[in-house]
Image (cartoon, rainbow, N blue to C red; front, side, top):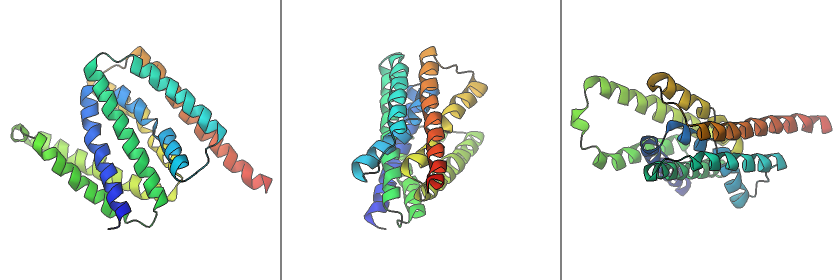
Length: 226
């Protein structure tokens, strides 16, 4: 496998092994809001590395989203909360960089890279699984379902699809996770996001939706101009 494949696998692994601890240390809403920053982080990396020009609307949306993240982080409840937010930031940077690498090296065998990432993530996680013997049959089924669908299938589809889309657009599609994550957790466990998280999340999601709308309008206007 070429070097780009190993790089994709490494970045994907970093994103996976920081995601779960982030959820344990801070609220699901905080993690979801930071995940929504991926398109803007990917756009910044693509500009620095690939010289992909970002639209003025994307730049403005990035500033609004950053303001939303600042409001969310300001509501952190202590050092544990900040650690979770820090891990979530590492995850976002890793996945954003992975998205740009995939865009830059479209010929890389991405399915092999995704499979390698899953094996690497498992190897890194084994030393932290001292209590794995206490997991019952039902819990093992839940873990297997999580690994196969949430991590394995989801990551593979995202990895393959990212080759066909611009870096920012691929990450924008992934932001559908932002409103769904807190919703499912609220539905199942009654975890209510803080007021600052809701305000910050509204700003971030508003920026993402506005950027998508402006991007589509610009794409529709190009054929008309020709």
